[in-house]
Length: 362
Image: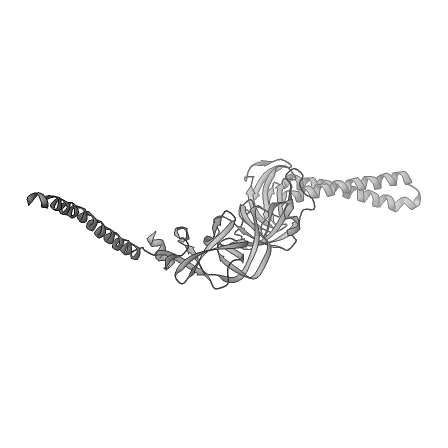
C-alpha cells in the first residue's frame, strides 16, 4: 500500500511549492500598482507667474551710444600780454556774453593810448592852422596832403592803442559756464595764452553714428531717449541734423540730436546710451519679453488653459525693452507664463502664485 501512495504524495508536495511564489508575485504587483497611483496623486503642481496678453502701443528703437557735446564753446585767450591783475569768475560759474572774466594790467596800454591821442591832437591843430592860411596860398597842396596822410596814420595808431586797452579786460564771447580756468592771478600772460574755457550747456548735442542701411528710417524731428549713468530719468532728445554723406571707411552716417538741458543735469563729454525711435505700432498685442522661449524655428510661450500649461508658437514683431509685440499665435486676454516656464511641459498642471511668493520659493 505504501508503494502505491508514494508518487501521489510527491506530486502534492511539488504543487504546493509552485503555488506559493505565484501568490507572492500577485501580491507584489498589486502593491506596485497602489504605489504608482499614490505617486501620481502626489505629483506637485509647477508654480508659475502669469500675465494677460495686453493690447497696447509699442515702438521699434535703434540702440547705440551717443557722445554729448556743447553746441557752443569758446577757448578764451589773452589778446595782449601782461600781468594778470585780477580774476572775476571761477570754474562752474555761469557767465553772460561780454561779461568780464579777468583783467590784465592796463596801465601800459592806457599810456600808449594817451600818447597816440596826443600825437593825433598835434596833427589836428597843425592841419587846422594850415587850412586857415591855405586860401592865402602860403601853403602848398603837397604839404597839406602829407599832413592829411599823417593824420590818418595817427588816427589808426590811436585806434590800435584803444583796442589794446580794451583787450586788457578779458570778456566772455558767449554765454555759458566756465568749464576750465587756466590762469592764476599774479601770473604773466603772453599773447594767445589760453585763459578760460567756456561752454554753453543749456542745449546739448548728442552725436551718434548709424549704419547706412538705417538712413531711410531717420528724419529730422524724430524722437529719441538718452540714458546716462547716475541719472534715473531718461532724457528726451530730437534729431536735429542728418549728415548728407556716408563715411566710406565705416559705412555709417552722422546724426546730431538736440537735448534740452535747462536743468543742467547733463554735462558735455558724457557718454550716453541712445534709443532712436524708428516706428510705433498702436493697438497691438504685447507680452513681457521674459515670457518668450526660443525654439529652432522661432519663439513660443506657455498659455494656461483650465489649469494646464500648453506650448504655443508665436511670431514676434517690435521689441521695446521688456515688452514684445506678438503678430501671430495669441489673442488678447490669454494668460501667458512669465516665470517658471522653463520647468513646464505640455499639459503640465500648474499653480498660479504671486510673483513675490515665486521669487521667495526660488
